[in-house]
View 1 (cartoon, rainbow, N blue to C red):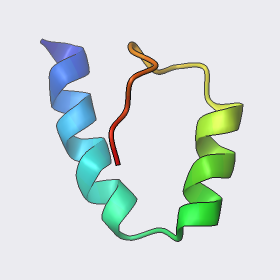
View 2: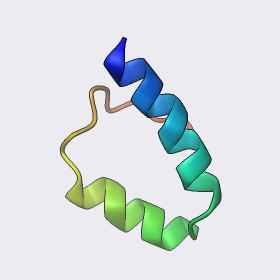
View 3: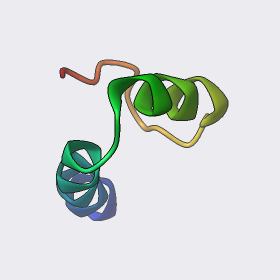
Length: 39
């Protein structure tokens, strides 16, 4: 439940940042529930 809501918020967050910054963020962040994030 909580992860799903957070993922929905993150999708909106992704729209505001450059792709390179996003990839760097994903590389640093180990807080994702699932490794399968589709962009």
